[in-house]
Structure formats: structure tokens, C-alpha cells
Image 1: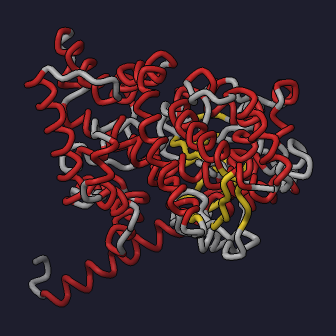
Image 2 (image 1 turned 180 degrees about the horizontal axis):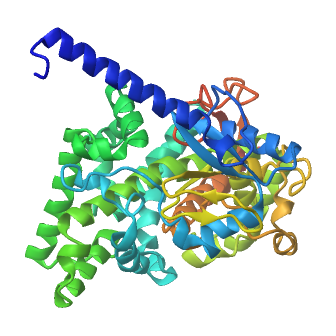
Length: 497
């Protein structure tokens, strides 16, 4: 109490907050004018990636290399020049090393994973995790993927026998979840099919954002320090408890029984053992940290690989000649032999198809960076202030007709080696670029190509009338997700006339 009157004090506090809010939003609303950066006044109800593509197109039309917009209450700097993109992601990375994402390591330990972390913690963890994704390690893990591939084929075969339409996203999500459960959490693929789907149900709950979670997300995105002060957590408690217990139990079991497997969690356990000898374990790879990394394998794998596989099958179903060319390559490389780690690498045309799909439907339709110290844009007098959010409109770059003529056309020929060498190194960045390029990119591509090879070797796909065309993306989705899903007809290859 200040004045002695509860009503008076409450009114004064309310007016103070109202004035502070007015000053804050007024100052933000004129931010780009004061920075001498052209302000682009665009509004959109589309997916954020599509909105930023619209911003990119407007900047290109105005011959701008960069511009300023406002997103969720805050000023955001957007780039439309590939050299600027390269500077921010590689050459001047020290100014933009963070994604600027919120995490709460104490109360929400699963949120302290490599995608969210920054600074020395991120650097140390990246060094520890790099051995997981070497070609040699992935080759050792490949037999686990093949167990999951067998389950995928059986599921699709059952659907085809019953003459059911294939909900592609749901089908390939099951395959990817099996891979993650086995590789990141040490579960058994066959047992996973016969037991209840607790693992999958808890995982899917993460992507079901309640109203309260959305409000929390907006709060911490715009006021991260306030979020820390209020001890805001974003992962539901039961989800966090389930995954944390699962990892702790797996680690304890393997220690007590001296069980060793060729999977990701084993690498983390081994790395933890090595770090103990260096007296650096608690700082870098505690059991909670291991759980957090397994958790981001889940999040990243669940949201990206199924999306890639879905759009590949959709485009091939629309372009039967290209689909047949992929199938012929698979038959030529494999013959009657089982799929191997080496044979996947030999599927050159399939790789081009995947790259072109990643151009049209990048898993990261935009990339976010946070400026950590004032940065002067080269050849200009513009200074990007510490704390400014930077958005790189990946979808806009990938549809730039100056880089990719007739960008709406699906053309895997764009990605023959000669044409790739001719383009700017940042003209195709579906997984980012520079030190913060997606660490699991190679594994994500490997599991996607394995699943695609298995399906295309055995089935021919056609677009069903149930698929709503032209595709319209759900605005609130994390990755590009078409409304109504993608539904395909599938037929056994040998039964086709």
C-alpha cells in the first residue's frame, strides 16, 4: 500500500502499466524507421514460412537486400540477399550464434537440448554429439533401421490388401517413430508393435498445443526474462516425466547388466563415461542432458522426416514418369538384394528427388537467429542491435525464380552436380547452414531414403481424389502440413499391367 487506498493504488498501478505498454509498443512501432531500414507492412494469416516468403518477394520486387517487419509484438530483421545470409550463418556467426529460443534447464530439463542451447553449453554439447552422426556410426545403426523397414512394409501391405487409401503422413510417421524409439531410446522394434502405444501417445501430445501452452509460448518468445522469472515451463509435466523416466531406466539397466547396443543412447552413455574421466561430465552430459538430447531426436525426427517422405511420395504420385525413373534406379542398384547402407548412397536420382522436394517443402521454412552483439551490415550504415531477431526466409529463397526458373515445377534435374555448383552456397538451405546446421541431417535423410526406397520398390502410388488440391498449408503447424492430409492409392508393383 502506498496511498492507503487499495482502489487508488490498483488504479495507479494499472495506469502505470498501461502507459509503459503504450511507450513500449510505440517505440517498437517506429523501430525500423529510426534504424533507417525499410519497413514492410504486411499482414498474413498464412503459415509463418509462407508469410516470410511473401515478405521476401516484396523485398525482391523493391530491390531490397534487407528489410524490417513486426512479428508478435517485436521488430524482426529479414534478409533477401544470399551474401547476407551467408554472412549471418557462417562468416559472422559469432554475432548470430543463437536461435533465441526459450528453455528452462532447472524446472524443464528436457527443454535444454542442443537445438535450444547457446553459448559454451551448446559448443560443448555439439562436440559430444558429433560422433553420433558419423557415417561409420550410422552404418552400425543401419540394421536397426532395417528392422523398422520390415514393419513399415507389413503395415502398407495390409492396407493395400484391404484396398484402403494410404494416409501418407500417418503411415510414414509410424515408421519414423519406430526408428526413433529404437535408435534414440533403445526400445525393441518388434516389441513396440505388440505393446500399447504409450511412447507414441506421449510423443504426439507434445505437438497438441493447448490454449495455455500457446499463451505461454507467446509470453516467453517476447519476454524470455519474464518467463525465466515466472519459472514458465513449456513441456507438459506428464510428458517430461515419461521421457525422463524412460531414459533413466534405460541408462541404469545398461549399466547394471553391462548391456551394449549399437544405438544413439549407447553412444551418449559411452560419451558420458569418457567425460567422467575428464571431470567434465556434470557440466556437459548428465543423465538429464542425455534425456534432453534423446527428446530432441524425437521432436526433430517426428516433425521433419515424415514431412519429407510425405511430400516426396505426393510429388512422385503426381509425376508418374519421375516415379518410374526412381523405381528403375532402385531395381538397377538393388536387383534382388536386400537394401544396404551402401546401396542407399548409390541412389543418385532418388537423392535429386529428395533435394527438389526439400526445395519445395523445406522442413525449416524459415530460420531464426538472435543477434548477441551490435553488428554493422557490410557496405551499409545499418547496425543490427544486440537482441534483434533475424529471420531468413528459406521458402522465399527456394522459390526465387531468378535462382530456380519456374519454381512451382517439380524438377529433380535442378540438382545434378553441375547445376548445384553453379548456384550460391546458400541457395538451398533446408537444414540451415554453418555451425548450427542441423546436426541430425544425415541421419534424417538416411531414414527417409530407406523408407522411400522400401515403398517405391514395392508399390506404385497415385494421388487420391480425397487429397485436397491445390495444397493449402495449416497456418499453425510447426512444419508445412497440408489441410486434410495427403491420401494416395497404392498398388503392388508386380500386379500392374
